[in-house]
Amino acid sequence: MNPLHAIVTATDFSAPSRHAAQRATLLARSSGAAVTLMHTVGGSALEDLRRWLADDSQAAGAIEADARQQLEQMAAELGRSQGIAVRTQLSVGHPVEQVIRHADELDADLLVTGTRGAGFFRGVVVGSTAERIARRSSRPVLMVRQLPHEPYRRILVPVDFSDWSRNAIELALQIAPQALLVLMHAVELPFEGKMRLAGVAEDTLVRYGATARREAQQRLHELAAEAGLDADRVRLCTPSGADAWMLIVQAEQEHDCDLVVIGRQGRHALDEFLLGSTTRMVIAEGAADVLIACRRSD
Image (tube, rainbow, N blue to C red):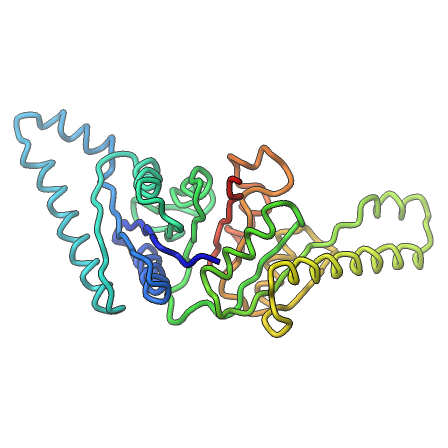
């Protein structure tokens, strides 16, 4: 497992994005990674200003200078609080494009964002700039909800046994090497409804469900063993009876998890460029931070 070496965190200077920057610097301190605090001065609006005030270039320059001052001040405060150096990057253009481009230039291991805020992260989580970054970036994206006070303690990793599942576990261990992992598989019972309508005996349905859960438990044990997880570092759960996103949110609360690692890509190739419905609902309805994992290219 390779340690983090470069982290990029985006800010609009709102409280939620400050929480994200604080989490990024906490991770940087514990891992020894370099961290860059980035702000984007909004593309089209600034271009309009420059066009409308073509005879007064000082106006646009003043906006950039003010943003740079705020960025440097915030970086200095974060650096002092964690005892590390915080780099800065001020860009002009479309926020999503600029953040992704700079993360690619640095070959960053992790992109850290807030979930909502003023301007850059304004609005609800689903459909926000944060979600668009998570959808389009080829790198893991950590979406921070809460003000961080300590390293992550309990991490929920929902798996569907697709190729990305092992990557999600490795990413969780990379982010928080000392955390306890809760591996979860939402058990689905195909044709259960049709079997009930067909009059299949209840004890047969109970055995059907029990068999499916035993199989899921066995596969979780095997996955944990393949990942090298000690028994005291992992918990396994196989809930059923509701939509996967509801079971994930319930497990997050029941196991007191402060981070959920969930894959952008699961069983379906289309998800390569989309956040699936389960991922979107977990982002919208959960309380913990969410780390969007992506499949590594082999």
